Length: 88
Image (tube, rainbow, N blue to C red; front, side, top):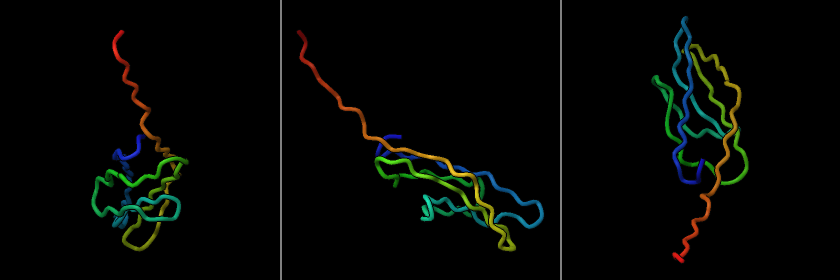
């Protein structure tokens, strides 16, 4: 992803017995967004330039049970330089 671009994040969560009440997205242990209704998604624009960032989603059911997704890795880069040449 390029720096400043919105990164779409989405998680699928369900609990047939008690229902899902919240899904939260994290970078490491830092909360970046919570979503309370499906589809559990949002566009994240706060990614840092450089090193890979590990994103997880945590889902809560109505009795407080938490399930955490496997992490995904996102790397944000700067745009390649634009070189303008005069015609010969």
